[in-house]
Figure (cartoon, rainbow, N blue to C red):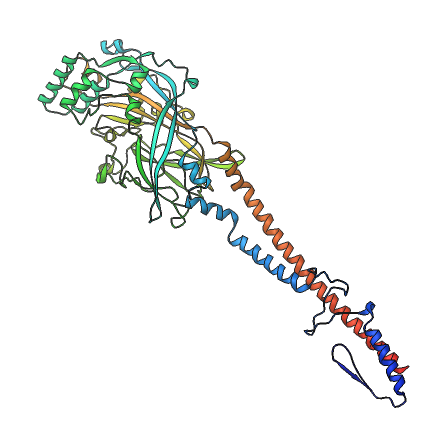
Length: 544
């Protein structure tokens, strides 16, 4: 007699002792055992055992195969978050500077966080100096006179070579609420056109000096002058200025010598910077060209110094290190300087690096023939010639109060008190994404007077002098809340979220795969055990 179960597996035996009626009864009993709900197991043709009970008709995802597939996908996802992290994706998007995203929008219209603080020097002993009673001029510092520097970026163009070109425009806006200085206050200062032109003609032939002396006499100009603070900054006009344009048009090309008027008149420049992932983190927002040239304005290729790979300080490269040297360019300085790491400090809950303007920034360099800022005669260390940026007018730049300068600089005048905390220049930068937190760019403009011989009146008494005119402090006072929030999220929260998310993906994957493996093993074991029971029951039944 032959029996066939639901798996089409044959079980055959012969028993001549059983009658046909007994055979039918036994077959019905076996079928009843095989279909018993208590011991039913769904066995697929492939040999896999499902974990669902017969009553589970809802199709819930309890199949071990489904769990393994989902676990594998979560593992792949977790690995991808290690290779392409959200943090790296965020920084790469910043490199691209896409319009409409925060990095681009905040740069195009920077927050009004830069204050310009101006300090001017009032001469208090002119009469005693001219009479010979005092050997040096005595200076009184007046300030600060506070303005807000407004910066706009317009005419933005993305170039095919991975650079960005724009026009940077700066304006100074007076802040009455921040000022305690009366701009109508009268001060005594060196007469810039008289002494400046005399210094310019210091080695000129006799007939040129004679013509200059006639000019000074006819205009009744003195070596010093009195004017209001406002006029000194914004409206410095004298008859000799207009007359000077006739004998030295290149030296005096304008009617207004106000020190801030000269800086902020037409303060617009075309700048090209590196952006995009092809240029990398190290070159992000470094200058490629300034006003169409890689050379310093007004220097050309006569000077080896270039503006290439320097920064204006609006944005810095990403992933800065303590060994990074930041090359800083500011048009008013007229040369590129170096900022060096000093120490770390925390702002807004994030770590920052302080980069300080090098102490030897204004020193003489070797070899002397390649020193573009030495002037003739050669200036002492601590003072750089910047006359090329001011129509060859004899102007030199230094740290305020001649900080770090040659001791002989302090011998020219009285009243200066250099202090590192008040007169150094620095920037605090979040090093990972290159956002400047706060900064101070400080510099002093000085009138350089060469050996003055062959001039009338009191001009000769100012021979071989350096007279400080004013110093400026460009202070980025902080960041608006939305930039601080973005920076904190990117630097602090995003890396933690990234690690937690990746860990959750891997943990979920392991749990699913482990669960599927256990379920498969238990189902297989149950299947084998139940088959043994069925086989045993068959044998007992057949023997009965």
